[in-house]
Image 1 (tube, rainbow, N blue to C red):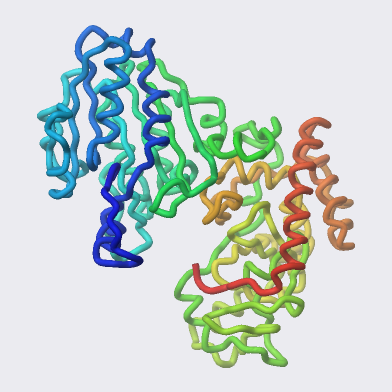
Image 2 (cartoon, rainbow, N blue to C red; image 1 turned 180 degrees about the vertical axis):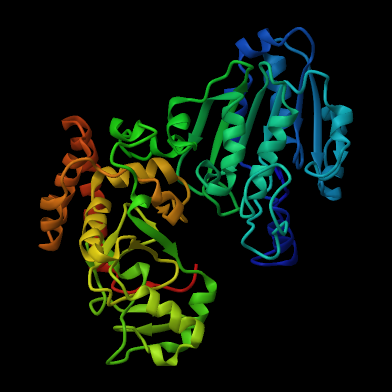
Length: 496
C-alpha cells in the first residue's frame, strides 16, 4: 500500500477505482519519517546489533518505509536486511534495485513464501501502511471472517496487523503500522488487539484527527515492542481497546476510577434492558410506509435525537432520499413481518443516536415512537415498570460520566474524528450507578439536562475532580450540539 504512485487520472477513473479496491494509497513522507524515527532509535539498534537487523514491510508499495528504515539504521551504525512484499506487479517493478530490498510479489496474507524469508527468531522490525479494505463494501470484502481472528466486518488492515504480530521477533521485535483509526476500538478487531496486548506493549502512537492522505480515512500510527513478559498498557487493559490513542489527544477526560472495576456492584445497563439496533431489512421494510401523515407512530431517526430531547416535528429530516417535516409510519401499510416488528417496539423505551460526539438519548415512556435505522433502542426487561426503568436509563445515558466511558470504549470508531459509533453490545456493558437516580430522573423530566448530568455523576460516585473534568468536557459538547441544532435544521437519515 505504501508509496502507491499517484497519477492524474481524475475522480473515479479506472486507476482510482483500482486503488480503492486494493486499498493502495500514497503515504506522505512526514508520516513515514515519524513512524521510522519512533521505531529505529539508537538504543534499539544497539540492542539488536548481534546480527543484521531484519525488516519486512508486508505491503511495501514502492518501498519507501524500507528505504527510510535503512537510512535510520545505518545512521545509528547498524546493518540491515530488507524484505518487501506487494501484490501489485507494476508497483513491485518500480522499486529501485539499488535500494537493496529483497522483493516478493505476493499477497502477504495468503502466500506461504513469507515463511521462507522469515528469520528463525522473527523479524526485528515489521513496518508499513497496509491496505484499508472495508468489509461493508462488496468490492473489497473478503466474504467472511479472517483466518487470523476477528469478526466478519474487521478491516483488512487488522489482518495485516495480526500478520505482523506473527512475523515479528516475540522477544524484543517491534511492529509499527499506519492504520485506520477505527481499528483502535472496532468490535470485530477486538481479538487481534487482545492477542497483541498479551504479547507486546504499545510504546508510541500518533493521531491528528485529520485525513492525512488520499484514502480519505482518518488514520493513526502505532508502534509495539514484543516481549515474553509484556503487559498491556493501563489504558488498553482497562477498556479492551486502544482508544487512548484518540482520547489522550482529543480532550476526553481520563476514565473515572469507578468504571475500572470488572464487576460493578450494581450490575450493568444490560441487566435492565434489552438493547437492539435495526438494520437494512427493517429500513427497507419501513420505507413504503413513511410519510408526513396525520396519524401513525412518529419515526425517530438519529438526527432527531438530542440529549434528553426529541426534535421530531421541530426539525425536518431526510429519509430514503425524501424530506419529511414530521415523519410517521402508517402501520397498516407494513407487511406482516414489519407489522410484528412495529408492535414489539411500541412499548416504553429509550432511543439512542448511533453516531455522536457524546451519548444522545431520549425517553419514550409511553411507547409511542418507532426507531429509525440505525438508532439503538433500549427496552426495559421488567415490563411492569417499563416507563420508570426507561426514565432511569435515559438519565444515566444523559450524563458526563456515561459519555466519557463511551469514548474510552469506542474512541476512533466514528465516521469523523469527533464522533463515536454507539452500539447495543457496548452500551450493555455500561456500569449501573449505585446511588439513587430519583432526582436525576426528575431533572430530566423537567428538561434540565445539565442538572441531570450532575446528579447522575454523583450517583456514579465520581470524585470532585473527575466530575469537574467530565462536566467541562461534556458541557462543551452540549454547546456544539445546541449550535448544530440552530444552524442545521435538516439532518440526513439515509441508511448508513
